Image (cartoon, rainbow, N blue to C red):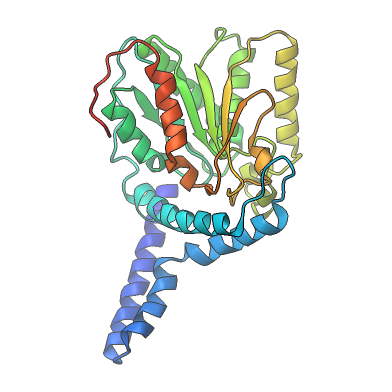
Length: 316
């Protein structure tokens, strides 16, 4: 569904751009006028992202995190315009299934990649290429339904974790962006409650996940967007059940949480952290761009390549 919607949007924008060019050339408009009309058609995300960063600056203050400077926010906005254009204008609508999952090999720790809200597996193209180049087994899911409950994604995650573990003989590393991190927690809660071994995954790594909700979720009206509002019944119940399992003595799965004061979707910034987790701040990095930052991928490779496994030396 997300793929089809994005394809339709991109093709509509291209048609509008061609119509603008044809009309302008027919009437002899100067190149400057042609460009002035093309920019908002081809970069429609730029003004919307500017509004998000203005809201971040106004309402995203967090005493627990160093405040982003205007220069950092400007760089984050520019990086997000580029990243979101590639993700939503090319990778997700037209290349979601272009990069196959990495082949699982016995004895090699695998990586399961989970996308977030309004996304598909095309988000993870650079990760899939980098992992495959190093011989790391990996699976990237396209999760559905896109706008139901976060809990709806749990069965697909459970099946993918079990499949990677079966084919490699090792619990995989689970990496999730944005809302995907909440789905990972919902799955992990059920897996631990069902007694699926002491450690169903090596670790959970989240990138810009609203573990404590996000201020921006007030503008979303789908079921899963409402679940991401700070203090939502879903988040409160998730935290309560996690605490109950911890009290019962179930082994804790370690978390690494990447977050940043330049995240235009999940703020205040510390809402993307977890108590007791390895919380790592990314300075001046926006929400989608966080996926393509070098630090999370480098950390994922460090974790999985520490396990004994023959690895190709060829870089991505």
